[in-house]
Length: 138
Image (cartoon, rainbow, N blue to C red; front, top):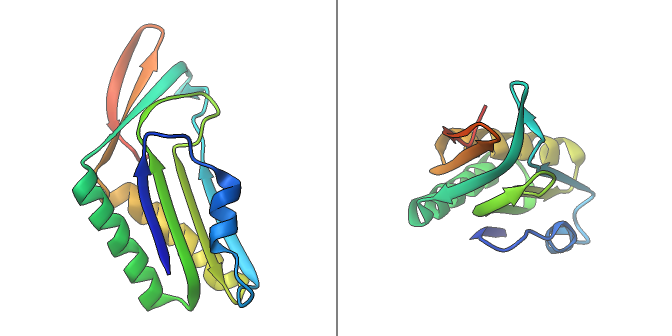
């Protein structure tokens, strides 16, 4: 089972965890991406995320399908937020449930690493002295 979403509304961590929980899942791994207060020593005021939503959803679904083919997982959730986010807010939540922790850890890491490489989501970092658009990966 998968739950893939892009939203301008704040993401709810507990509801994501609740969705992936199941009696057959002994391990749940959750990745939360948060807006940090600085990039390369420059204080961040806020971030703005934009997505080409039809393609982003398709790519996120592809990541979930790849995970289901590679690891014995029960549920996968990938939610990403768009719009203006302040320091401490959550732009991405990935939650993976599996019978055992190893599969959950491996699948969750694969999901965030692949999302950052393939999903058309961009971020603008806004500083006191300017702004820059960057891909939503390191």
